[in-house]
Length: 275
Image (cartoon, rainbow, N blue to C red):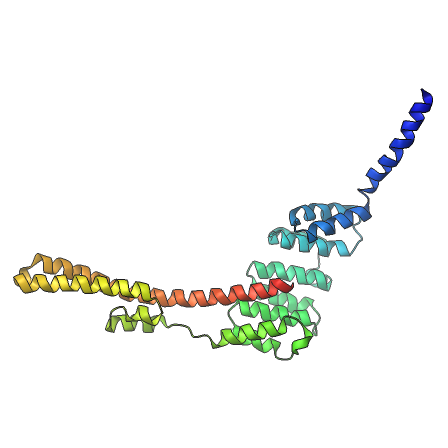
């Protein structure tokens, strides 16, 4: 039976060695990169944290870890981990600084992101100019975002032309004045709604005001100033009139918000499509 035990030992040893190899640094790093490429970002953060514990001197791992936290939608954890990995944030490597700035950008801390990039990225960095332009665009400062792209040639970076076209369109957009919308509806009921292209609500408001005003007129015409029907419908009509003015002001603000939201989403889509 001793020869059988020896044979089993020879079979088990290679398998045990293969099992250990699966958890060595080389295999683990490839696995972590696979998790990132396949979109399993939460698992990637755990695997990269384990790798950092195994090889704390590997300078590529912190950048990958910060990227994994960003893609996993955990900017706060990523920022906290960045502070632990790089106690001097402004001295962190360029790629790590880029990731840290993205955390700030995604939390809409635009001024902090710009200040950080100004101090941490090289002065002539192409990515720095594009990141600053992105921040300005997300702050609805389209003209300033476009100015930052002026020194760049179209072939210098894939984002230059899409950004320019989008920002030029955003600069030329026309907003609606809430004051003018309210004034128009004061003078001609529902016209402020039409000014903001809110045709449906404008027609509904006009219909209700017209109907109640007509009923009020009929009541006063039939019974004079003592007509309860005239006063009731007159009060309702006046309420619709005041509401129509307020609604026109709000409609103008909502129109402007939709325009801003459209360009913010478009900028994010272009930016995230590359980085």
